[in-house]
Image 1 (cartoon, rainbow, N blue to C red):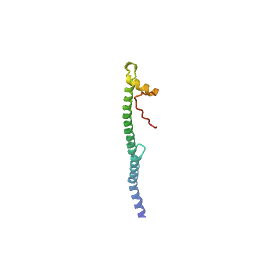
Image 2: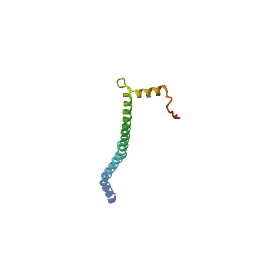
Image 3: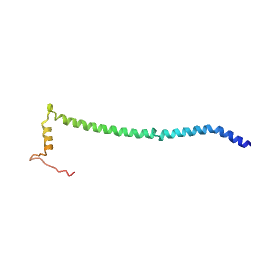
Image 4: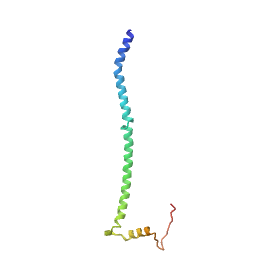
Amino acid sequence: MSVMIEIRSRAKQAAMPVLAALVVGYLSYHMVQGEYGVFAYLQLSAKVERAEALQAQLGGERQRLEARVALLRPDSLDRDMLEERARVMLNYARSDDVIILDER
């Protein structure tokens, strides 16, 4: 019987550290792999970087388009831009133009 008492005594002493280790392991796993863990944070950071790069690219394109539109405003009309747009929209070409057909 003394062996059983010794086993129970040691089991009671080991229960709390084992339980604490299991809780720490559980929390550590979810800290790394969980929905709000380290890996999710790294993926979200990569998405943010890609979105910022796309925003910078689109910002440059928007500035270019705004500059072209500004040339067509009535208060600062640019004759070359007006002629270019009219020729594109009406599908006109001059006799000395070189036309390159693009098959798309």
